[in-house]
Image (tube, rainbow, N blue to C red; front, side):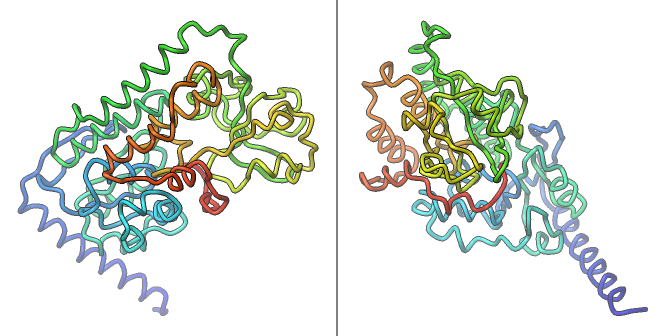
Length: 368
């Protein structure tokens, strides 16, 4: 028997012993059952004390908002990367010390996961391998859907809050945070109710890019929700999800407003100076009008659903329909929001740092 075979056998034996210990511990606990957003029936310990957040990256901001951070024992490295470039580091200064060793390049290592003794693993519905690895290791896994509300970011995050309540055994369905999101949704929808199609500016999001192509979200995407819900018109509705397009296609769309999300290092000045895509951007309306904007980053990357989604909706509305939302002082709204829900007092400089999402914040990762 060679050395590698012996090593594999030792690892398997270790996992078996740890799994048996976990099963014995679990058998002595009272349990309860929930149905998660994937549709799985999950048996949980009556009391959850140790939580690992895996592939559902935006959930960490919501978790800390509603439940604090004391029960977090593991976070995917991408969550920590985002936190260290966001306001979440101010709320949870020790977030970088929470273990991330259980995950590498988006893949869970069962042996390292078991070392954290988690009561539950929280994962994204699009990463079912997390569910398979955790459950095979004897750990309950709860799925959070990224499309449960047709990419309505505000309603999705509210549903995540409610499911977190189910996981932790507390009722969060009537929380002030949920009510706030519903209030902002109604405010924006009411003001846009009489808007004509001709009054909606043509908009485009850039999600990823290389020298020749750009990944542009069409229908069934966060981008489509943000654009349409805020009074704009998505130029990429011929596509569904994220699609690669070339410069000629963008030129034919000629968007009046371009938004760059936080999952890539591209910045507005790169387009203004035609430094990307082997393409002269000066003929694009959004570029010539200086209407290329990097999406802000607060507690997490605002492009996807996160705890700041109600504020993102207001920000988008002010970009696409500035006259209809001219009376809203977004700086003040952000300060009030953070003070109320995070007990965090932001300075003017803090607010400006939220607007000024950096290249480094992308972390060189793909969207989750």
